[in-house]
Length: 234
Ligand SMILES: Nc1ncnc2c1ncn2[C@@H]1O[C@H](COP(=O)(O)OP(=O)(O)OP(=O)(O)O)[C@@H](O)[C@H]1O
Image (cartoon, rainbow, N blue to C red; front, side, top):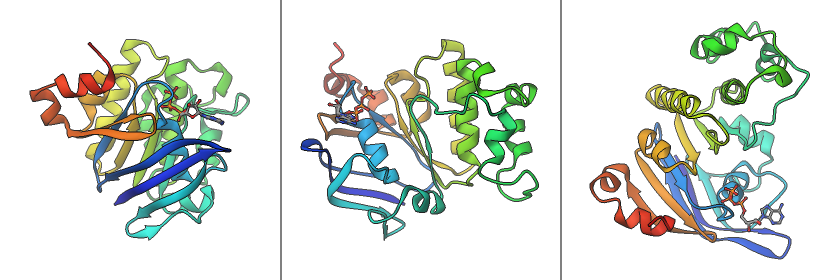
């Protein structure tokens, strides 16, 4: 469904992605692993066609259609959603206001405010709270819930477990697994290896802007040594 081919991305003269190729099939949860600064966020931003980085070579095929000339808004219209690193919420808007920014409250089809609140009962309890009144875990749930309001077929999640307490990380894993079961494809950037292995069916490892390892989670579970080597875990 999404095919990234030979992607080269730059910040000014800094060449950050060096020919990345990867694929996410319909309904698949794929984890993108790699240490800090290896280019994971740069890849996600390139796919969303955000102003930075600049993509200078390669192609981004979505169901066979090239995305590279589109704006972020046009990419979202193709039903690709982003859960950005750091959640990016509005401190003064309520939970419901965040959800209805992208789709009217009266909408009946696809993901609605009620359907999101059913999926995240904690947000239902806090639905009139403002962004700055939510805990880290609640903010992350809202960032995920908001991304669903464009009725995505693919969600790009950039380190959703970052900074969350272990119990919230587990809750998030359940949510990601449940979303995967609804047929949503997810490209999950994760530093937390065990979290990634518990929800994904395949993994890629990025190192200094290159894919250095690709495997199914089944393969990783049989023999973790190659993955550990690529992640520099001893
Ligand atoms: N706006 C920017 N301008 C210049 N260089 C940048 C910019 N953003 C990131 N970089 C550089 O690009 C490289 C890849 O960064 P990126 O944020 O994609 O890594 P990452 O794998 O997502 O790491 P992290 O886990 O820390 O978010 C790093 O060397 C970083 O310093």
